[in-house]
Image 1 (cartoon, rainbow, N blue to C red):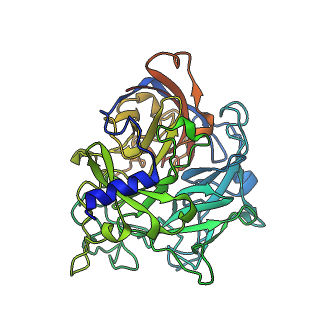
Image 2 (cartoon, rainbow, N blue to C red):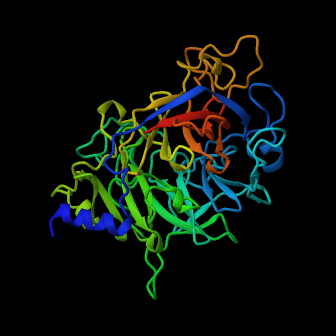
Amino acid sequence: MSRALLGFALSSAVALAAAAVGAEAGTLSLVGTSAKVCQLTGETDWATNTPTAARTFSNFGMDGTDLGFPAESGSALTLLFGDTWPINHPPASIPSVPPDDALGWTTRTAAPGGRGCLDLHIVKERTGFAHPTVTPAIKQGLFDVPSGGIFLDDRLYAFFWTDHCSKPSALAPDPVTPLSLPAAAGTCLEIPEINSVGRSVLAWASPATPIAFQQTMSGPLTVKIARMPSGFVYVTAAQTPPRLEAVPLKRMTGIPVFGAARYRASIPYLAMAPRATFDNPSTWSFFTGITDGHPVWVTRAEWESGHNASGAWTPPAGAEIFSGTGERCVGEHSVTWNALLRSWLLLYNCGGAIKARSAPEPWGPWSAPIVLLSAAHDPWVACTLVMTPAGCPGLVRRNYWPTLPNGNAVMGGFYAPFVLNRYTQATASAATKAGQATIYWIVSTWNPYNVVVMQSTLAATE
């Protein structure tokens, strides 16, 4: 069977193509400006010097953190946090061990805000916040973090980025051989066991033991560990909407999985994972473009056929979900289905800004990017959301990082934007032709090293 015919057959098996497939990309716009709702983590609100709702240091020993990828179970919203302070690294220990991430959750259904913010809880142990662990063990220290998660059949599946240097080299885009390693530097050996690219593993935990993740695939008799597909290094999954009739693909049975090969230097790839075998990536189908208005899918073997004699891998042509060399910048990201906008919504950080795109299907066509938040577009963020190099003269603002040799403070930045889809609300104009929706999302700010809840109103047109 030809690749084109195989792709068409796989796409039909995964989903029923809707009329929107092959349509022109719509437009997405920000209505007004994005606004801070509340500071989710940390002891003291950085801007107001008042206690945060969660008071995570007093209550859980959690001083600073980032990420917080949301995984929706229906009853609870789980948040997978990254490197969390205080980090328990004994003197002279390897900074990639021991685990230092954290796990939170909320059952709140009302929109974030007020005195409770998100009514956040953190999984605790006797000495403070508990650390999610993966068995068989992987590196889970500095810069080895959970990148995404999803609830399926009463299991929390999470992708863990590992084997990544704690002080990596900045990666340049490399669409031809995206898994290639940079030259070794003093801070990173750039060997398969530890490098600036890293790799991802897929593991699962049960609600009874939410921090004990297992690297095993389902199946009879033999216990196996899943090997992630080539190029799926920084990985997320899009939670299946609770009411599939709201999705253009009314018989969608697959789970969209997105992966960036090079951290903050990629355009994501897309795989469609069958729900019943989500934990077995060898059963996934991989997107390689659109032909005659239909997405083309290939098997795992075809996806990885681009390995050459030296071991370098080249992805199939058309694998990136959108085009544009100027946008090969995706690292942290989230993809959600927005029923009010009737589109998939991609949020990511790029060039110091938080950006968004929309598409009628997970494979596109994706709209042009819009900026949701940046210091350049939103001057109010200086000393309100983030530290400036000059500090914040006349204001009491905690500096979370040592002062630089030139005397400047470490500039705060925005990254890891994740939509909290359970809180999405219709706006007064939602009945008009141009759909509108208010989304709530979280973002990490680096300095301060904590997570903030944001609010934006978006409009989309087909």
